[in-house]
Amino acid sequence: MATNYAATATTSQRPHLSNNRSPADGVARTKILLLGLRRAGKTSIQQFLFNNMQPSQTFYLETTMRITKHAIDTIIPLEIWDCPANTTVESLGVPLAQFATIIFVIDIRDLYNQPISKLVEFIIASYEANPDIILEVFVHKAEKLQEDDKIENFRQIHERVSDRLLDMSPEYEQMQLNFHLTSIYDNTLHEAFSRVLQKLTEPLPYLEELMNVFCANSQSSKAFLFDINSKLYVATDASPVDAATHNLCCDYLNMLNNFMPLYKSALSSPDRHRQLTGASAPTPTLISTESSRTASLSSSSGKHSASPTPEHSQRSTLARNASTGFLHTAPPPVSTIYPSAQHDRGPTPPLTPPQTPPPHTLKAPPPRFYPYATTTMSLPSQAGTRGTTTITYHAITKNLALMALVPTTVFEERRGLVEYNVVALREGVQGICETEEEARGA
Ligand SMILES: Nc1nc2c(ncn2[C@@H]2O[C@H](COP(=O)(O)OP(=O)(O)OP(=O)(O)O)[C@@H](O)[C@H]2O)c(=O)[nH]1
Image (cartoon, rainbow, N blue to C red):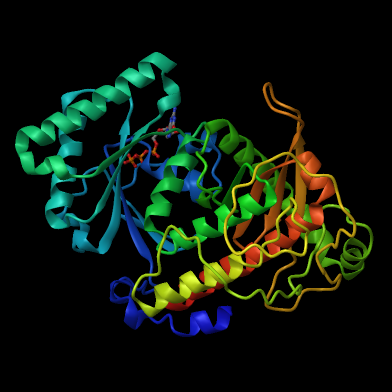
C-alpha cells in the first residue's frame, strides 16, 4: 500500500519544494525564520527544542552574530534560521518568499515602544514580501511573571501590535498574526511550536483522521502523535488539547527519552531480544507489524474530502484504507471491522469469549521496520472521573510515537485490540511519512 502511494509522490507535483532543496543534503526543507531583539530568547528556543539543551545551560549562550541555519528532521524536514537582532530583509540574502513561517520572539516584559516598533517593522516587511507567509509571535519568558501580570502584558503586547498595524494601514487588518505565551521552563513552548509545525504539515488532515478513528475505536479520550526527540506533537485527535494532559504526556515522554539508551542496549543484545519477544508481554515489548489486514474500503467518514492532485487522493485513500483496519474495543463482536470513525465512549463492556488477540508474530521485525517499543503508565483516578487511566506509548516510526489515554479497564481487558488498532494506525502513518520523504528527497 505504502509503496504504491509513495511511487507517485514526486517533487514535480510540488514545485515549491524543489526551490528549497538544502545544498548540504539535497532534501527539500521547509524554512522557518526566527527573529527578535537581542536576548529575546531565539537561540534558547532552538536549542531547547531541538538540541536537548537544559534551560539552565541557555545562560551561557553567546550573542548570535550571523545567521545560523539548523537542519531539523521532524515529520517534515525543517530549516530554522536563527538570526541576529539586527537582521533586515536586505541582510537575509534570500527573498522572504522562501520562508513558510516567521516567528517573532519578544520578551514578555518588553512593553516599551522600541521592541514593539521593531516587531511591527519586521511584520510589515514580511507581509509586504509575501502576504501568504505565516506570522507567529512568541511572547516569551512568560514564567517570569505572576499569572495576572502575565495575562495583562500578553494582552498589552497583542493590543499594541494590532493598533500600530492598523494605524499604518487598514489593509493590515487582514493579516493573520498568531500570538503564543511561551517559556523554556515549562511545556508552553512545546505546545506553541507544535501548532506552528502542524500548520506546515501538508498531510495533517490525513494524520488527524487516523488519530480520530484510533481514538473512537480504542475508547481513548486523547491521543497524540509525538515527534520523539523534540516532544512536539505533530497530530492529535479532534478533542480539545488541555494543558494538564499535554504536560503529562510531555513529562512521560521526557522520562522515556531519558531511559531510551537503556532500552536500546537491552534490545541490541540478541539474547535479550529473544527474551523480550518470546515470553508473556513484559514492557517494553516488541510487536511485529506482520499482522495483515485486508479490510475492504467501504466508506469514508472523512471531514476532508480527497483533493484533486494524485498525491492528495492517494494520501486520502491511504488514510481510509488504514482506518478500515481498526477494531472496536466495544461490542459488536470483535471480528467486526468498522469502516469509519464512531465516537462510542460508552462504559466498558464485559469481555465476551473468544477474545481473539491480534495475530502478532513474536519474531524479529523485517529489516524495513524498527523494533516497536510499547510501554504504559497508570494514572490514579481523578476527581469526577470513573476508574484509572493508562497512558500508552507505542513507537510508530523511528521518529514518531503514539501516546494515548485509555481507561485502564479497557486496556487491561482489551489490550490486544488496542494494540491491533495501533498496528493499523502505524501502517497509515508510515505510508504518509514515506510519501513525504520521497517527495522531499529525504
Ligand atoms: N526566564 C527565562 N529566560 C529565558 C527563556 N528563554 C531564554 N532565556 C534567557 O534569555 C537569555 C538570552 O537568550 P538567547 O537565546 O541567547 O537570546 P537570543 O534572542 O538568541 O539573543 P541574541 O543572540 O543576542 O540575539 C539567556 O540568558 C537565556 O537563559 C525563558 O523562557 N525564560
